[in-house]
Amino acid sequence: MADLYLDGAWVGAAAGGRRTIVCPADGTVVGEVDEADETDTLRAIDAARRAADDGRWRDVPPTERAAALGRVADLLERDTDEIARAEALDTGKRFEEAKLDVADVVSVFRFYAGKGEDVERPRDVDPGQPHVRSRVLKEPIGVCSLITPWNYPLLQASWKVAPCLLAGNTFVLKPSEITPHSTILMVRAIEEAAVPGGVANLVLGTGPGCAGPMSTDERVDLVSFTGSLAVGKHLMKQAADTVKRVALELGGKNPNIVFADAPREAAIDNAMTAVFLHSGQVCSAGARLLVEESCAEEVVDTIVERARAIRMGPPFDEDAQTGSLTSAEHLKKVEDYVATGLAEGARLRCGGARPDDERLASGYYYLPTVLDRCSVEMHVVQEESFGPVLTVETFRTEDEAISLANATRYGLAGAVWTGDPERARRVARALRLGTVWVNDYHPYVAPAEWGGHKQSGIGRELGELGLEEYQETKHVWENTEPAPTGWFS
Ligand code: NAD
Image 1 (cartoon, rainbow, N blue to C red):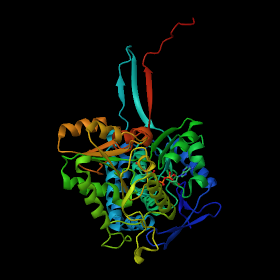
Image 2: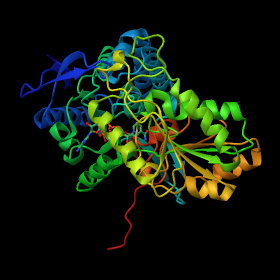
Image 3: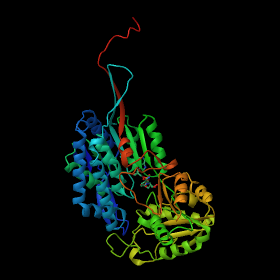
């Protein structure tokens, strides 16, 4: 009964709210957690503000803050199985997959733990005057609101928490209300790593129920959000009144472009993982296949055949290749999305329904689905399903492929498959995307920035810029021989 971490103590919700967490793979109860309301969030903000103002973390040398991140990484690695189990039960993803996610999270903490020397980067500039020392400094922003989604709960939190702490900020973190358990374990690791109380604060609950002050309270300096476009826009408007910094990692409708000269087997195999990994609940999922007309039939037929053979199952089923969707609401959204596509004239090649398998009947499963004969103006091509749904469009020329790929409001990620390196470079340059893979799909590394063009977001996570998101810039002008200016004398 103490799942909120406020001002260095584990406490229950002030109003006694509780939420039952259900495993989406079979509907069983995973546990109950405290559910905050705005009173709890205001306490969290109050604690984070005091901790930011008294310098208990800001004034710790950056190399020591980095060392604390290293300890967090070690603790998360030590507890990999426990954390992966929590994540798998909350999300419905396979346990083995969740373990890979934890390894990724550890690498994110280690990456920033290795950056202690790079945090302040004071820069002397030439003031053009003798007797003046002019320095530009990087400082923590202050109090950060961190709001994360349910698809990769811990990974998305780590992309924010690690640089936020390294930069010397304090924070209030709110994970998705339906997948809180791995984030609770991460905050426990932060506590065990001896980060001072009040620096890291955790509230659990819904956005409307408890997150309001995270984007409106004037004691908060930055809102960093990963989630849907609709909520991102809402938060940006909310944050405008007090001119907070805003960092947004939003949705994607990511094109995966396959030219006829591509390494065919690799392109087909990766087109499958691009869209069906984690049942398509990946912001960078390659959910839009753009395939050159001359090879479209062969490519799509093979994908359909293989999609039909994907084995679904609960987290600890060793035969399963993918899991369930993460909530009943989300399953309904995916069903509606496919129905819209069919009404718009797309052709259903496989899937399009829940599996007809007794073993899976109590979970929120949806069959890997391929819709072909899609065209760019369709809702299913323009909007994210965030489910295991591949839409297929064809093209004839390179220019057509580029213009189709760029024709949505999103710009998160995508890929180009071709055997022609010159073409790969041309297309990669022309795509308005934050990440472009050439003859690959999905890999990312902590030193390389991640983020969206267009309405996929603002700002960057990971890499150097992922740290700068959490820093303010200050110019200090120091006159070593002060003298009257004489201007008004
Ligand atoms: P969501 O926007 O519904 O929720 C995200 C978070 O915002 C949750 O913690 C939720 O409780 C909170 N929230 C909801 N309403 C709120 C409000 N009014 N005020 C404050 N907080 C509120 O998104 P989701 O369904 O959890 O996640 C799926 C979305 O996230 C997809 O669109 C996906 O593309 C996106 N996503 C993007 C990235 C990326 O790196 N760009 C990564 C993962 C997920």
